[in-house]
Length: 173
Image (cartoon, rainbow, N blue to C red; front, side, top):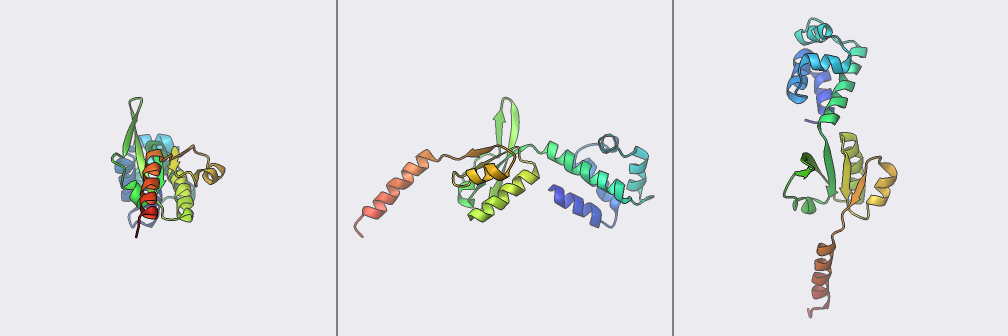
């Protein structure tokens, strides 16, 4: 579940405490005590919220939301790949091993330049540590994003595509 859905499900839930407990224990995979330490909210306040004995005030709700955002971004280290759906279908793995550390790869499909820019901004907002994209997109993204941008250089595919175009363009039809 993404961060925005967690926050909205928490706020819109009929049972705030139950939803908070689910997000902390299942989503963030941590104890209420650990969440209390991270958020700066006392354990007793959190337990009162969980039991329904108390409703959160605005300040507490803000701390909870900020903590969820901070913790979920830290736990979801990933590299974003922006490409067309057909290009993304070529991915065979959604993890890369870098010096013994498994890094997730998340797809952000885009069918136009505008969609690609929106997807790139969304990927950074989702917590991407870096982004991989087409050469036509990277100069713009380097100006508007603060994460590293890596450009796809499709050398073999480019040469194969030129050969196919040459066959089609110069064949007798």
